[in-house]
Length: 446
Image 1: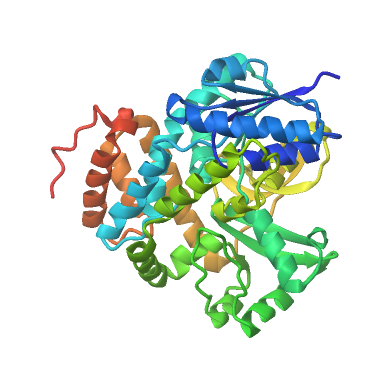
Image 2: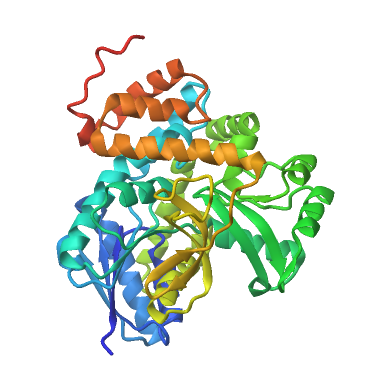
């Protein structure tokens, strides 16, 4: 059997050692022969540093995985079996703008939610669509597994406008929620199953099972009795949920729901943190400088524990488990971003959702959950409308469509503020938004 060829676009990312570790651990069942790490010229130095660490990790493990480093995406894609994307168009400097500018208008500035999420999508979607077109030409039988945020919006764009069907969006939030629930219940994680349904960064645990027994009420009661013990992520402030609200909600919310259900508190927390430490992008930039100094060490041949501070916990488990399950036709259940196809009744069938799927050799098969509970259904539909309109704006470069997307996002308080933020952010990111260069908004009335 020939070995598999895996291509990682954005290979110079600090997350890459996570992926390499995951592939090494699974080599007996997932025989990757070639791992191609691809980046852009601006990322060449980091690509070489990470690539050399990857080679040392593989050598220490004694597995015959050849690591290839390249700036030539087309060369890497030819005859690939799996392609993962973890790109950041505009690098961390662009993320810092996404976080700073909305704060000037009293709006949360966050990488994947609100105005920041919109602009990350506007920058990212055209590049991912180009990758999909190249895959259709160079490796039509491969699977595209996108980890780039905003993963839900990017998956929506790929499904609606892409020229490639074998697309899966991936996030580490569901697996992180399962791990944290296991800690709350003081049990091994493999004993926990959660019925996930919703959208990326807006997913809910409808039911929680321990050894097949529904323990949702027990879990929510624990949360009510002791406040919420850390059901969050590294990059999200750990503001406690109101216990009575969690009890009334009746489902397990993912950490990103704090931005919608605790908007004022989250905004105040972000404003305070930015004054003391800078934006999350600036914090991450310092973390990455430290990580890459570690990565340079020629004696380092394992993933350093400091990587956990970066916020990508369980990334390798999520990505490598998905690839392993497709390759081996495991038919296990994982939460991924796919075409809805009727799994959630109140979301259009052709739209992207994040839902439990049976993972097969032919790809993920969504598990039908019916309709979402009334208390969360409207918010999910509103965000889905935002994602659809934002994806259209990213493809067309139409100013009015982008303004509409900005305005209908629930974190944006008014159309006037939406327009001012949109204009400033378009100017700030113009180098990475070529599709908007022909767009004129001189006829828009202030």
